[in-house]
Image (tube, rainbow, N blue to C red; front, side):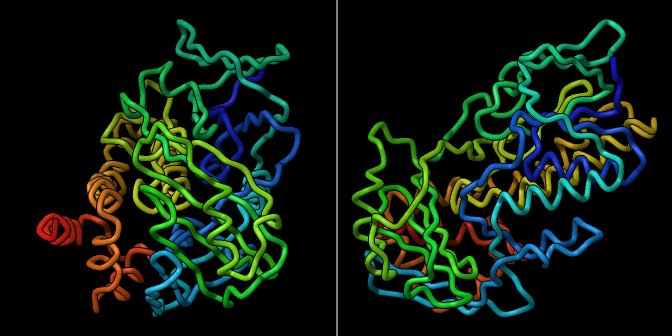
Length: 377
């Protein structure tokens, strides 16, 4: 049976980032991917250009659009345009292209890939070696395990990692194969049409990424067709043009332990998605980078456990998301006032640019925003 240093369950953005950085350090890595190839992964695809700092190679070849302006609207009117100053603060990518690109980088440094490997069992033997078994009976052994199989992952609960209670955003993501009247290099955020959330439209060269999400738990299903019927004509589209799918997305829901003994969670499996803006790519790439760093030190004997990974993610991501969750709970309960006080203020464009570029955290602005919203209500 094959023994590797690290087996990574899932070949998405977080898993392939982890794989690349470990393979780049000479570690024996294997990605276990349940699909035969990378299917189209329709999502918003927005990410801060600051993610480039975590890679020694350029990500620009796979960037579909560099956003320089963000347009906000309340029920299709009362628009605000924020100009994003600086060098490429917000990028739009196709997720399947990003995942494939990062996988190629990992494979080029010697990482192995097993496809159609649908993991059904993960257990640790008495000699502290992990054994992973697939549905078709294949097995692989590893010194450490990385769980990177997304929002539907069952493994966090099994190993008592991640939030005690999962919080899910209800989302819809789709694409339209033309630009309509969406301006080049402009991202659109629409508030007021989606209860407890927002809709968006991002340019993708000659296509447009369309989506919506609701972030406060609601027993009622999101009326996707009704929202698209209102939103898409404003962008120059007919609702019948969009091809997409609904999904449940794990979002950040409190500080939690992301590692156990020689096992850790990354990306959506770790519930790292931004609870206010649904940004998932940046925390996926960040967690992959930090996971690889901790695993490399552990494999080389420099540290005795992986606790530093959970602590780092709490400091670099979780503390900001704790404030992001508070903002989300207030903003989406009072969206009209939130739009007036959080989007239309004179300083908003600068703040928006700083958040999207990763130069400002929710923690930096949350106390002022929450006090303002509560005072008005």
